[in-house]
Length: 175
Image (spheres, rainbow, N blue to C red):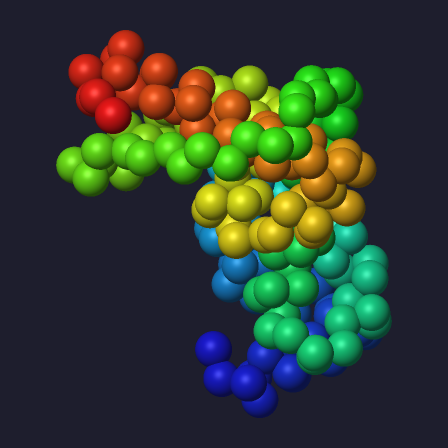
């Protein structure tokens, strides 16, 4: 969408214009639902996070400073909302000195990998998605999830190990 038109929609949202809100929602809903689903792994939880996230977006739109794109700003809110859905779980803590790289077969389809990711425990899945899919650093993940950087690193390590096992078991992929 053109920057000028997006700015008009943002100004409309600042005035609580429902039409502007609907247009922004329609523009970003699919991408943000994907973000929420990758983190929550449950359609209903992802829909809840999406809904709550957009309520927060429109409630706090005055905090948007155009320092990043509107999409990036909304994505940050959605990630935090989805993580809140998972906060009921306690994260297991593992040693932080696990640096062995994990490799996956190159012929794994996106659908197979997505299904395997959904089979991960929520703590593993959250860190894996935030780091490998969304590109957050361990420092950022530790702030978002309120865990140590070492825990983030070990969760990622064990998530990759678990993914290998899942892919081996279900799809017959070997390392």
